Image (cartoon, rainbow, N blue to C red; front, side):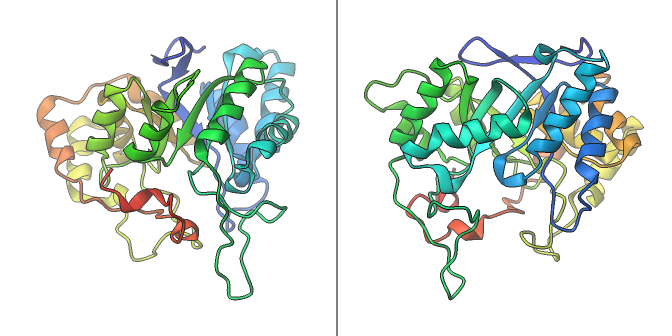
Length: 323
């Protein structure tokens, strides 16, 4: 692993780089962009790459990693790869075959971290967002604990090193933690987390259970037209954030990332621009004093950029609870 990056210890003994590179691609981004960006990220020094089956960028991640291994820049065990089990594959009998599909896309024998993308089960099939003739999501009923048991088996089979969850609230985490015969705790909970939604209650809960919080949308999301309200405020334009950035002669993005790192959060950064990708890696070069951390804490307004409307009718929709 790159020496300039910090590592965070997971509850199963493995380590995750504190800063990761996100690979979600909105529909409006050109097809060739993700591969280009992942190549730039690895060249710049990113050693933690976050993808998901539903992003449809796993093949790009695999291609980039293989080309960098072939060029002698990295070895497989230098790179920490996360991918995610999508909502249409939560039935226990579909978990391993879905993981194997992801491994094939990634051209890898194992992933470092495999996580359940949402606690929301949707109708199995080829369609990633299945809907009826009225455009209503076709939901499914699955016991998340049964899904978790197969995740544990995938770890035992060596297909994944660590297993975790994403977009779970504390009640849903409790369900897994209190499961009779639990073999492995989730190592992480990856959630939307940024200055306008700082997740302090969920962070405290996860820390009390030795579960690492991983932040996505840490820079305020790429604002994909399909999922994000175009009228929502642009996080990186926040005047308080820009003042703190100016004071430290850093970019608002660097301040945002640094804020999370100092709270013990593993943070994902995403960009398609080479200068920003390099800049985002410089977050280990400075520290924010307590008074600035407090100023940034006060920006929280419980604003969720990505409320996952496709899952709103599901009994396990995670965002109705306080945390």
